Length: 351
Image 1 (cartoon, rainbow, N blue to C red):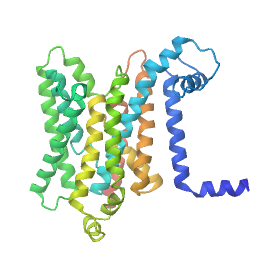
Image 2: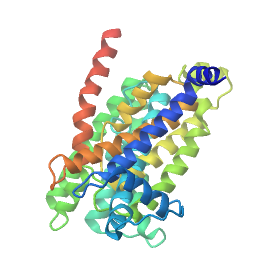
Image 3: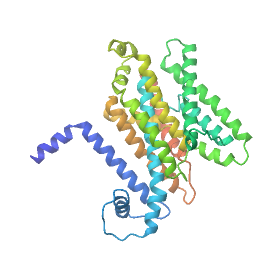
Image 4: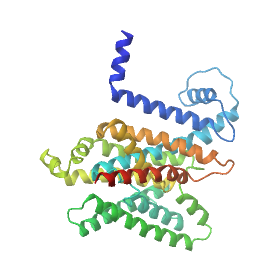
């Protein structure tokens, strides 16, 4: 009987995949919390989380300093990194499925750059919108991300009415370069805000705290719901618009919903962490290679793997040259750029 249970478990690849990514995220969480300037035993981290987060009545004496390190310093930072990674991987999966190209992601389509422009404007002028208050930064980032995506798609349609995937991606790269120049211009005009803006642009989750996490979580929830409710449509669109139309998909409406979901999570992630490239490119492609292109599973699996990956990337960023820190965007670029080049080379060879 136990042997049959094990055989059925191993035969259910999707269940195995979910358990694997959940285990990966759990290990990434515990390791990231335990490592730092003060190293904590993993058993202590687990005990603190069980007692302080899940309120289990564990009669274990733990130094309050260690509890403070875990609950007030490391846990919010690690959870924020995981949430940002989940957002970027989720957006990358949606963009790649919609455009039928594994090279598409928020970075190459210009959405990240557009969101970055909005965030830099908020930081530069110190804007606070009365209605949204402390959510001004993600709100403006999401709006400017939408505007950028709209301009990119409109320009691609002007260049080529059929809006081929390559045309959309090239248009995104063009506008990313333009917006990057605009950000550089604003940086050259800054005074006291220069260090804050530059460090933010390189990508980091340092010194953020719980407030930024609660700011990003609603973006992830809303974006995931938009995308997950359109998972079947993403599957249909991956076979081409004509096939999707024959299957009864309202292409125009579904595209809008998918773009809204992907842009919401991108704008929120960029607002709290800056521009972190390659996560939305590499993680969905890796997930697709391991467990297939079905968006019913690709979206959540990419989200969990992206969360664990960015938590570990942040761990490397803050421990590699301790006590100094590297921007997390540097680590993801070092890993992601060679992978991006490999994917591009492989794709070109198959043409």
